[in-house]
Length: 353
Image 1: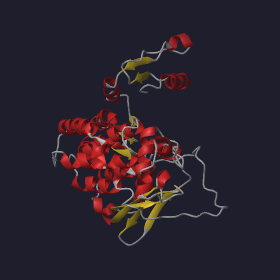
Image 2: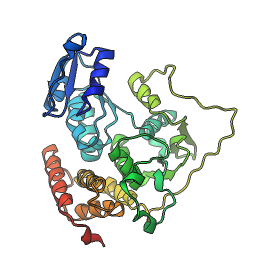
Image 3: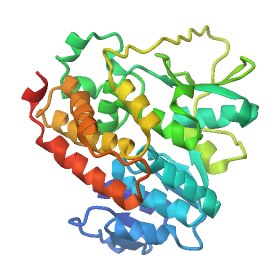
Image 4: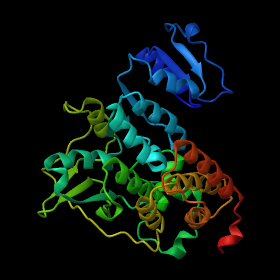
């Protein structure tokens, strides 16, 4: 499936010959694949068909990897139909984590994280018993502005924010990494995925991006999972779990000296982390509102309508002014998502000078 990257999707269809291919954007025509000498694939347009395909009885594993709230329907369809879900769309759990994990327990769906940090935690937890868990430590590279002051962050441009020091990612995720909102979303994701309270989650800055996360047990033992940064490893792990196989990812060279740093985050320069911890603690509609407001604020920053340092200001204001619901239904979450987007789109920069 692709949203608008039709040419890349055509290349993948030519290589892998899938039964179905879906173009998310309604305004893009289905490409004439038969004219390219490729056996006919069943092509569809629009996101509605995705949930129907996921629920087919011959589908066993679903990889949910769309960016943003758009991935929620596919994630829900997978857990609702009891599938094995390789989850790369963290926003699904940020928005509706309580509902998704509850439904997964009812249907027998297996949720295996693909995010490198949550994959690491998932692996580390196998070293002990859940009742002995003391805390989890999410690592973060710190993004391109690690060490910047609040004043320096006021000068950040979209071009600067898109240059991540470790990962090659899309624009939205790159900006989230730069504000550390990506880590805020991962805090909320971890809270629901692993069923732990927010106070048992810690964030540590790890510039080398080698330690992907750690787990501490009540006896003081700390288990970490680390490897050279390469998303192929957690993707393969999620698809093959519980088995392991040779991976195309680069392996650690133990003949070379390694320096691995773990540094406390600067919560004043990067207030998104505080928002993440608060939303994880309060639950309810908070995650849906945080995610929706952030998606709009990031888009406005990339369009040069909003300064970089005000992205989290918008999110904070929308969070503080929404009507909180502690136990929302899926329909209520979709409604507050829409309202938060509308409010974030209305905010003017002078509100935060």
